Image (cartoon, rainbow, N blue to C red):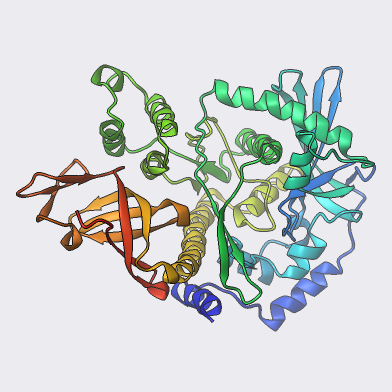
Length: 492
């Protein structure tokens, strides 16, 4: 079966630690039996926290409670207290560091922690007392953050909601009934509206590339490829997590001379020049624009196009976000400091952030010096990229397998890459690219014009360039190699 083969190939190619030794599973069981310490925890079990996740989610990292009051809002973001269960230097801790992150494939996951912890003891499941690290924030009526504090707590989530349920509620399509979390969700919706205005006022980047959801049959074959529908409900969670993450970064910045920061540096100037040419930004504007102004101008132009080529090029222009002990700010979010705090079940840097916060709350020094922490930050960045590549590899194999029946079919494509050996054409309906080899371009011999992202015919002068729409045919597919060979549909 190609599904199993695709995952096994990805595990082998990327050297993924996909199995758990009996020793590690035994340690997880021992940890799971650990008695919850309540003496130093604030009892918040009476507050109507709720988790909001996808319908198929099993590990619940975060729960939210929001209250509207006369001064504005009180927002509580409770995060699974993984650091209480997974001790520094333990065998499970070393394994989690080695994995770096949970790896998500269509229909399955290679978790960072054993399921006994990730889906059970640490997970903020409904109607069960759970240890949590809470970021409690006070915000004014316009959504501006006034103050915050971190502390250990015991919570009891009152509802396990899905994005779809929350979306139906806030759009009045199907309001929640009889739930004690309704007031909290309503307050959170009001707060989110204000937070989005604040986000817009600092000109944070709004990039929303289409995401594919692969619907699988019981035999784990792709039945359908659908576009992930953006929902307002996603923003409720996203803005809450952004606030908590920003507070975590500020906390580390204030109390240590280093931290575990999520940094996103300014784009490379040479890539910005390519972007300016592609979007034909007038010279008088281009010369005076900051990198942020340039990117936002291009995003505005990209939104006017009826395809994703513009957004794809903008994404290719941006630097990768990484982890670092030095606070270099976050270009995309336009924040002076940012960290990852909200997903310690599935991301090791979040666990490190929790440990630093805990040490400060206990008036102790960090368990690691800056050099040790920087090594872990760099390794986490590498492992994050490994996880992304492995996930994308499996997705591409499954999409290629799905497209086997469409060899010879015509489809719409957009050029998203230009090289001396051909064009990479994005098949937008299927979230994958194929190669249109230069030797298969009809009627001429084509050469790359340096610095222009253009292939030009030697005799005819005909050109193929970045962002150009094409009608193509699938000539051949090799699913396990993830290769799609394309030709021009009309041969002209």
